[in-house]
Every structure is written in C-alpha cells, then in structure tokens.
Image (cartoon, rainbow, N blue to C red; front, side):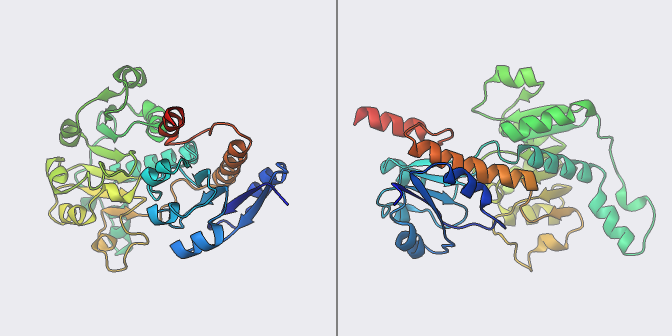
Length: 330
C-alpha cells in the first residue's frame, strides 16, 4: 500500500495520462481521480488525501477545515481565487498554482483581441453578414501605431504581450502597484496610477489576479473615466469587471467596445445583453488553451505534488512565505 494519496478532485481533461506518468515514477504515492462537484463529495471522497489536485471542485473554508492529512492544494491553472487561501494557511496547507501555464497562448489571445478591436472586425463582420458592404460602419478608425495601450497588471502574460507588440510602435503604460518601476522602465513601459491609465489609454487590457481588492475594479466610475473611443480587453478574471457597469457603459457609449475571454458568471447567461452587441467579442474562457499547454499544466501540477511529498519546498506556493513563517514561529 502506498504511503501517500494524491487525489484529483475533478477534471475536464480527455486524459490524465500526464499525471499518471509523473506519479507512477514515485513509488510512495498512489493517484486517485475523482469528479467531485460538491463540498460533501470532496470531504467524503478526498478528505484523507495528502495532496489535492483541483480544477473546479469547491475549496472553501468549510472543506479545508475537514481535510485530515492535506499538505497542499494544487490548482490546475494560474488563478487561485477559487481556493480559500486564508483557511488553508491557517491549517498549514500550501496553495500552489502553475504560474507559467498558457502564457504564450493567453498573450496571443490578448493580442488577437486588441487587433480585432483596433480594426473593428466584429462590427464590420456583423454588418457584412447583414448584407452590407462598405466603409461607413467602420468609421472612424484610427491608426494602431502611436496609440496608447494600458496594462492593468504587468506580470508574465502582460510582459509577453509587451514583447510581442513591440514592433507595432505603441505607447505602453501600466498600472501595477507591486512592480518595481525600474523593471517596467527596462521593458519600455511607463508606470502610471490607475486614474491616468483609464483617462489616457486607447486600449485597456487586464492582467491582474482576482482578489478582494480587485473585485469590480472596473465599475461605473472607472468606465466613466475612459475615453469614448477606448476598448476593454479582459483575458484575466471575470470578477475584476462589474458586468452590469460594462453593459451600461457600452449602451451609453462611454467606451467603444470590449473583448472578453472571461466574464463574472460562466457560462454566460443566454439573455445577457453583451451577446447582442456587435462591438463586443465574448469567447468561452479558452485563452490559455492549446494541446501543448494542457499537457504542460497537468504534468507540472503532478510534479509539484511529488516534489512536496518528497519533502521539498513547493515550486510555486502562493502562501509559501506565510507558511514558512508559521513553521519558524511554531
């Protein structure tokens, strides 16, 4: 019988062979794959696990407080907003992610959305499908070179966007209170406050995590400060944008359009007004997807599990500092 139990709480992958390959090389652990949907199922079926690999199953305080042996909760992805980090930290449980997952894919998705907005492709495409042909629907359209691109958050994905768009001769600015200004300057990006970013950007692209501080960061007040010709791009987390405020801003023509890989409530409601707007792109939260990215994500999540069970510090624990301090202070 294996010494440790690694449990996949839930998954939507066609295969879990990457995890099987990693764990099978670590004889002290067994891998169990479940499809838990509720708190009760997680506690009953996976409550004695040493490591939880988690996609969407609930990881709130109620669940975490009932975990018996858990050393780490490892999320398939970058975001950890679905896990109660404070509750996990209080129990000495690491909360880990895969921060370099889908960086190339999500940065490409962001750029595709920015360019689609710049050339007004959604509006023109819809007009052509209605049987029209001409330039009028796309007017006014402005040259992309020389426009201002504002980043909310300048982490891995945003940095990749900066590098890939460098040949387009854009003026790039960013709001990121946690970034060293010297690093931004090295990238050719000017750090500004949030108000300045909203008022001066032609394109605002979101790349910050969903935290209590950032929830509804883009509300009615924020949209009221943006240019009427500006576009919002969100390939981060839906909760950062107040959906109702966005709908109002678009209906009142306070901004020119939006491109969304994510939205507050997923899947989006069929009667959501955004679906009927020609100046809006909405896709089903697949910005980080490619076949290669999924294999990498699964492999690295499993490698993190084995690494921790081998007695090592986690590669990527969002609460690692807090737990280490807790261990030192007893």
